[in-house]
Length: 341
Image 1 (cartoon, helix red, strand yellow):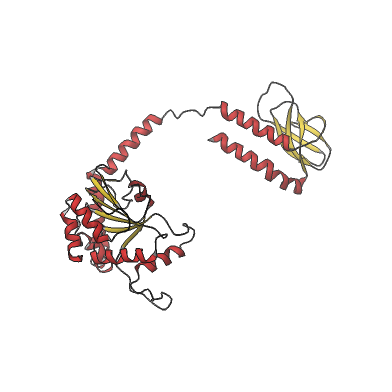
Image 2: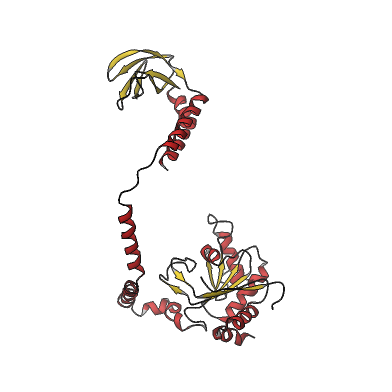
């Protein structure tokens, strides 16, 4: 039984015509008035049948071209002119002189209405190769995820690292080389601490201090997204800096600030996978199996999990991990928090 302010949860398992309509709206309501300003008023002229469209307007003459074979019923064509009437030539032959009808809102409504009717009646033909493509895509995906292919990728990565970078790789990326030997958690275990910029800054800084004391890269602080959206990176940079710097009085403007070694990621897929709807929340995961280490661990198509334990509420990280350790029987969690009691 836990304090009332938080609880633990154990999860043992892991259109073409629409575009045409938009174009018609944009053309009739925006392009036409602009064109009218430059070349004349928008309007319509009669045509011999519905298969004739405007090719060009020159002075008092409009030239039409045929686009198909129709049943002979009269049609209309769009024109832009300052004249009240035009001499109509169809395929180079004079047809008649016709009066220009002004285009108004009813015309726009009629065009959109016809587009809606067509959208409800037309059917886009099915790709006859869809079945073959699905089978081929399935085979390719299975091969990509196979241990054989992933082993070849890892072997080639090691070869490039050795032959191209040599000893300089370990010099410039010491954390990557020593990653497997750091921390108390196993490679298939994770501790996710879900936080938000809406939390009190002091509380988030306290969690960051606890994570730095645990000193395990598999304990990760997770944010759902960027502060104030992806279009503004500076608020996120400022927020992360205020969390991780050891001295709150230190200013990045004056020079470098000493930062806490905390693994912080922005990953909305992790929030979605574990159903996080409140912060702070701690999730302990074990039996993690990942196909591609470069992809998100929140992607259900990339990773599998044996089971997970979730604790939500305001409590110290060490206390929460102790609770989860007792419930799950995970000795690694007990070892992780033991030096910090």
